[in-house]
Length: 319
Figure 1: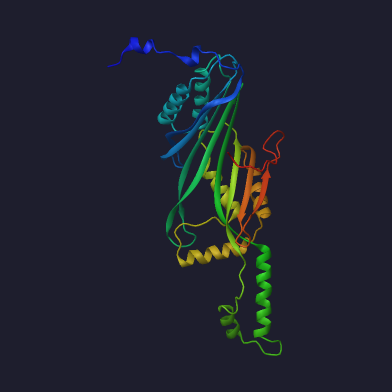
Figure 2: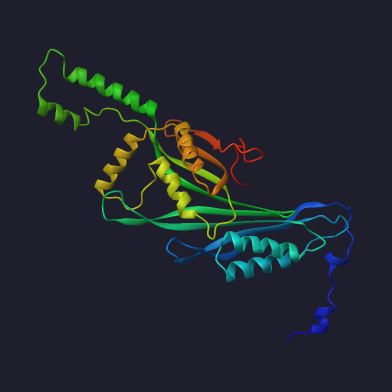
């Protein structure tokens, strides 16, 4: 049974002890809080996913020993359990952080990580499969100013334009050897040659590639545009990896790769052009990583919107 007298007598070291060295702290809080998160999917369906949360406030009183860690945890647990994630609910959570730390803090920050599953159709056949997209939602309430960020990444295929040109050259050379100019061309023989391994004696190298996005959002939207942003990125890149694949889907994918030869620079420019036209995004940072099959290193391009005081040309992904 609960003993209220004993609980009231428990010491609170953080509230009464004096720190060894008086100083303010930029951030104090908790990492890796385990909690389920709810998201409203397109069409109004509510989905849940395991979440990993970081919760922080600053400590602007140099004489205070510490903050109230348990209050951060309880606010996270209550807010994320009771209500789906939205810009409004995240703003309310940060306000709760600050209201429970009056006199100690005037800035709050939260980061929520989870995986978002999307059902994807095949390119041609009637098959479907699941794709997993990592999502990170971060928000800061700093001295009255609220900022909101959504980060995600998509996986796509990239075929090297240089390698494709070199492969075409080798195919041309093989054609000249097999069909000398002095010999009349026979249509059926050429068709059979084009379908043979001898005819296609070189192929360009392609690789699984990764597009990482950080987007600063206007906080006025009711829900997070997770699927919209994923679709925007995959549409700009044109060659997202597939789930269920029959032969007709694999052939369609080969056609898409052939029609979308791209260096990492091309991928970066495609994504930048698509993001510039989205009015929900006030700033963005994106990094295209081509995990080379030719080299043991990656080819990387970074783009941003170019907003003054924004993401700029930083090269690092989230910590």
